[in-house]
Image 1 (cartoon, helix red, strand yellow):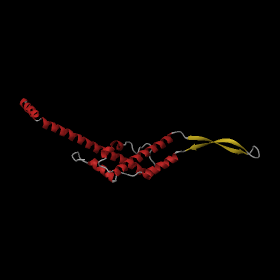
Image 2 (spheres, helix red, strand yellow):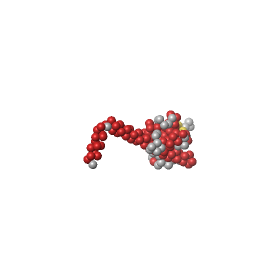
Image 3 (cartoon, rainbow, N blue to C red):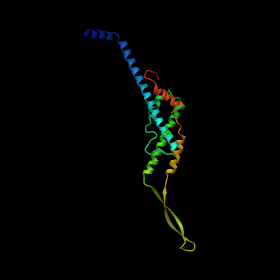
Amino acid sequence: MVQILQILQKFLNENVGVVTFLVGFIAIYLYLKQKNDRKRAAASLILQEIRYAEQLIRGYSASRTYSLYDRVLPTNSWNDSIHLFLADLEESEIDIISRFYDKAAYVDVLITKISDYKNAPPQTVMVPFTVPDPSATPVGVPTPQTVQIQIDPMGTTQKILEDTSRKVELVYNTPAGEKLKRIAKKKWYDPI
């Protein structure tokens, strides 16, 4: 056993350049493999987020309501991972995905506003106005009075939510979605 270790030590000492090259090659290979694995994982996660959001948006189109406890976009991996796909996707495809994420995030903001409003006590506003008093003089002297009016600002928010949901461009079955699917399904030994 000692002889084998001595032979190995002698070989390594005599071939330092080859050993350095092999170690460098392995380090570069592992770096590239890790980068590709990260890209595949990010593509899978982004596709899952898109699929889930599109499912909720399609459900809204059918029922005209969102559940106030659901978020259309619970996580946003696209903003953190967009740089991984710059070489794989065209600018227009990146724009389509970015617009989808922006609109889905805005839908979440609107749903949160509606939920907050529904959980808050009703708002009333006192509006002063004057009414002529017929019992006063023949001309009718105005008498100041106030009226309570209940305000519902969510009508506008609901309209914006409907418009935004209608304008969301679905991404999953577009060429951009297909490219993300190919990236996500590549095997570890396939080059990306």
